[in-house]
Image (cartoon, rainbow, N blue to C red; front, side, top):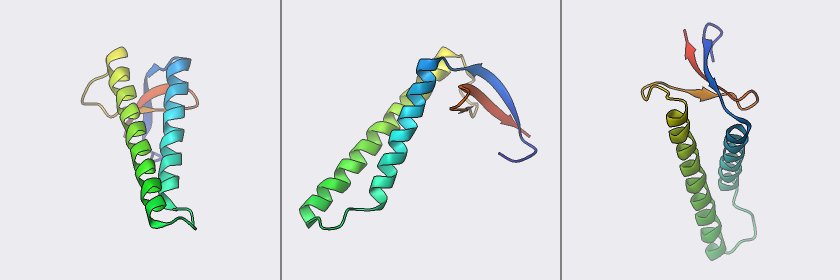
Length: 98
């Protein structure tokens, strides 16, 4: 966010939704980090399974994130063309305006 950008709060997520997206994002970050470093000492077959497991997990978490946003757009009647963000701490859904 640039210093000239202003938040326009559109809605506030309920606690369950806020905690859900927080958990989903945490899982995405963990899966991405796990992909960055394959543990040493694995044989090639184990390495392939490890990477496949990480990729599968990341894909599932990304799908959950897409579902979260799909549901949020419906629940809060957001404009389908808008770029919406969420503040994990406050639960505020917002857009940025210059």
